[in-house]
Image (cartoon, rainbow, N blue to C red; front, side, top):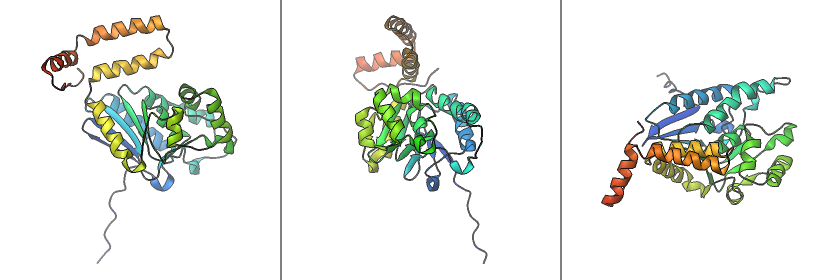
Length: 266
């Protein structure tokens, strides 16, 4: 009898939609989910499709095994390669696509988040860290610079001194410390992170999508606006939302003392 044929290989970028949540799992546990340029291209294409998919109301990004993402798969790195071109054309577009993804996003950081992995986690709206998560900028050991948006994301979450300490030393910040420093927004024991992050993503997906997406966009723009500009945009946004079916449903639910049942975006 001949041995059974191997089944299809598990996808490296494992994605599924359940309860209106798109879960994207980086699935290279033997390499701590380190990503090749091809993997990043696949993530970028998935983000582009999902941004237009009405079945997706929240995105949850996580990793398989003991890592979230340990960075770039250096087995494909070559001396003398054009690092600027790789960042500009392959890595940075994915970081930007995730940061500007029009729907809510959650990163469930289950282990090491370094290099590209650090950038991917911080490009999400909410960072949910396991106690055993490990955030780090290891570039000092390589004679290289922090990339993948680190110089943008980190100073918006921590003091400049903490950011530079992280860059200078390459020290690892665990989940609990990341939560104290503001690097992570929520913290969970390792054993419950996956379930806790899914519950949060499902709760967000049940919310009024027009309102949530509009406020995400406004928060992004507010970083470059003054108070007067923000107040004008808040009034404009509120005026538009007051004409939506979700707003009518929210008022009806309030009057009837029941949970609202928000529909999809028109």
